[in-house]
Length: 476
Figure 1 (cartoon, rainbow, N blue to C red):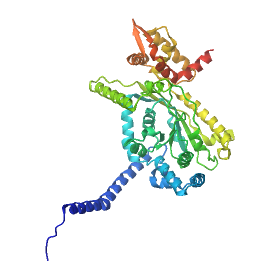
Figure 2: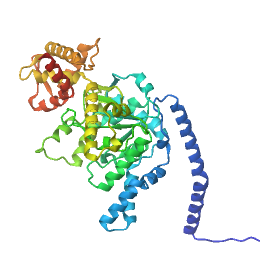
Figure 3: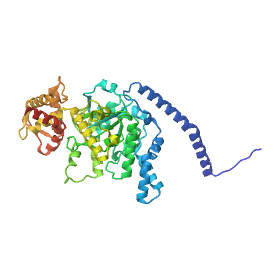
Figure 4: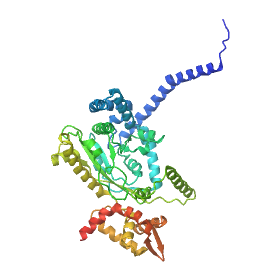
């Protein structure tokens, strides 16, 4: 028996779409998931053999599972009940709000993206812009850290490049989970950042429910041993000086810490410095209350113009990198040992007393960071040019004063990065960079600071101002 059935074209297209979706859903997607998962597992097994600080099971847990753990955390459930009573609303409404916060905060770490794409991009970008160097880094210190401990890199915050630079340099040792601001919540950047293990933070939020959810996530990640990177200053330095530490994140990590039963928390101080910070003038502008607020269009136009100009210079083989970017790693600080030495039990302290102890630890960590901030050529040249005002200096005098400054701050313990073989070249290159950026002008062989650019020169000199003060105090 045979015959023909006639159907309309729209119905045929609909049936074909349903068939294609069924094949995709039942055959292709499961197969591709298996293939991708297999490659990721092989990558993790391969990388785990060379990482000093291993990827924790928490990072490999499905994101939805972590979200559910966070939403149904006993302290979150308790907070939901309290706030529901205060607002006189159903508990489910507050729980939906918590779910939204949890989805916003919890990352979705992908080892393949982190090591195959993120690491490659970070390395290319960092090396394209700077001569990247690691100064002080004791390999044995990383290897000797208890693999079951939670490692936290505490870093001074000079530029948004800090995220890229430290992640690139630490990728041979571990994976890093960052807290990033709302600036990164733009498509498709937020998907990549979340896959790299970073989590989003509303830095200025005063919502107690949101702060509670964030606190429990940080506590949960720390307790599970996730390696993290924290900027204790809470934001970028606007004037080049180290800012006082913000205590919130540190308190989230320590408020329930039991030195006897919990895994150890190990802080590693990291000092970062650049010969050129990409945001220097923008950061200084924020310090001026009278400065006109620039529109997003102006920022986009300026950024695109900078990128376009740089691409033209690359095509013409006239591109010059922005000098050195240096990173120093300091001595690890064990919280367990700290608690034993100071007889402090963070978990048993009330909020006022706990914050006092957290502040003491934070100040100690900032001092440790300060000790490993490197002194680079531009910071040194900017320092001597400011000290010579209003009198100018000839090139030979700049070299002489920089050498004298280096000797003084090295006696105080500073880590100075001028190549012994090419010291003169390093100093002259830094002087030339300041001249090209119109921060220094030359007339008749004499170099002087441009009066309108003293603020920017001070920004770079402030990176080593603590070493200069220490040297002056010792000389007195």
